[in-house]
Image 1 (tube, rainbow, N blue to C red):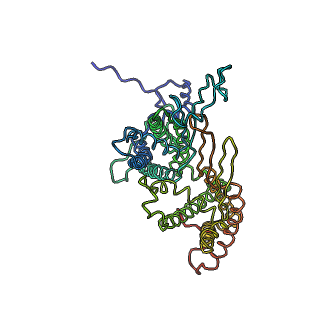
Image 2 (image 1 turned 120 degrees about the vertical axis):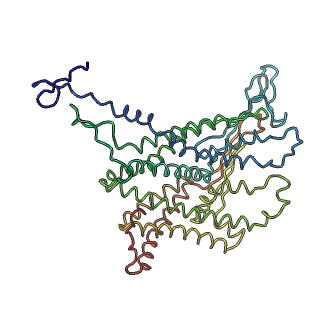
Length: 481
């Protein structure tokens, strides 16, 4: 026999009149809710977004490790593909913040006995203070950020998170009404009027956190692989790519995936909105300027007679791969060179040091006046690109100069990290010394201020002069631009 149905009291609540309902359960804290949503979210979609930048790094690594670099396969001391892959991976990881340091771990292998410190028979110490006259272990490092690899990594990540954002939009919008029956509302209850805490506007940030975690773990695996030990030389420092990946992936993923969620929040803050638009303008102008400089440098390099002279290679590896690997770095220096900032090389050792620079005047003496005119013309075109783009995207002059200031800050940042430096110490490597090649930041700042300000002013004037009546007005950006 079925049990009798419970009596329904007046009011339909199932509780006697005057009964006080207990308070609704307190929602968990914001951080706890966020991490719970991150852990229970779509990890498969985050993996599909995170795998593309890792794949890009592996492709560049294989391209660098594939050449034999003039080695014979019958040579006992030849470096195999596995070791070349690890070394190339250590170089590639510098694009996301990694470092490359090498240290002698099994006794001196470089230099001759003449470079070793002499032994003091009375004290048992060498002239450099090392015990028993043994030379210090050699140490060194290579500081280089291949900006072209960094750009490819960022583009691969951007493409992956854009696809993930499209899936999130489709999931949020839901199927059309004709696709099926509507989802019924949640049943009413004592706490039906309570504020729902299981839903929020942080879906984009949650997806960004998942992408960042997976990409950082993948970079950690690659950094652990990129630690070769070759001929008693141990390569380390690649683990610095892990925090670099965490920062870059976290910022880019959060900006792209949470754009829709924070559009209204950003629109309510006009100052921050103008800064964001200025950053977008500066980023587009900088990418266009560096692409132009890279194209010019590549054409000049291919027209160089030494490139087609096989005797210049002398049976070793071709320099083409290295030029392409550092093409973006050369483009940054080329933009500064076209604006008047000379390229400089500094070298120092225990006995002294020196500095050499190569500017427009040196280029005129070495090649001719036409080369100087071409360099200045390229610099002027890059400045006008910034000015015209700023004039078309911003109606206020203050916003245009703000975009120019952001452009200059980004350019100086690339100049600071775009050089190539190397240092070594210890008797095991023969002699200690340092070397750095690149563009000086102070010179880039001085000339950059002049060219950016002039480009903004002239670009705005040219845009007003050549704007056709009834066409797209200067400063009025199209939706979605």
